[in-house]
Length: 98
Image (tube, rainbow, N blue to C red; front, side, top):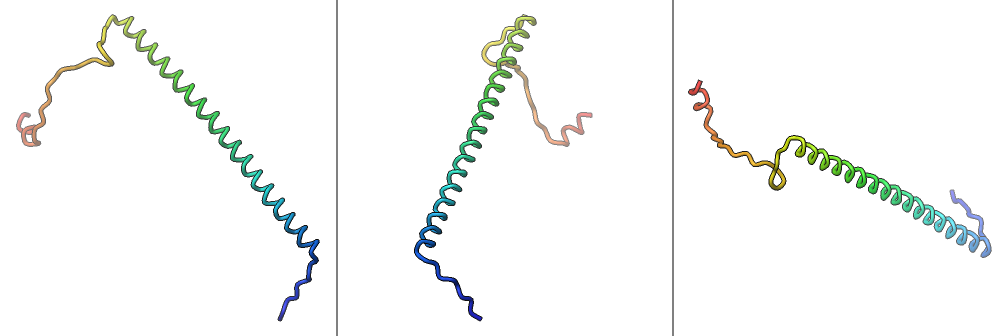
């Protein structure tokens, strides 16, 4: 069984090609717009997260400074150094000490 296709004239072919190009251009434009909107939303989200992180760190630094001021403790550098000794023994040593 053979299917016969209707022959189109040159005007119909050119119109089909132009319509195809228009559809592809519209799809590409829509894709670019959607991508730009998504990137914009991601940028806004990143800025909000960065500002929130900065604000929380600022509050933590202020709370630490207030704690130091209230407690009268003075720390050198970033933290407090605790000196101590650590020994690691076997399980037999642990049981024999009881």
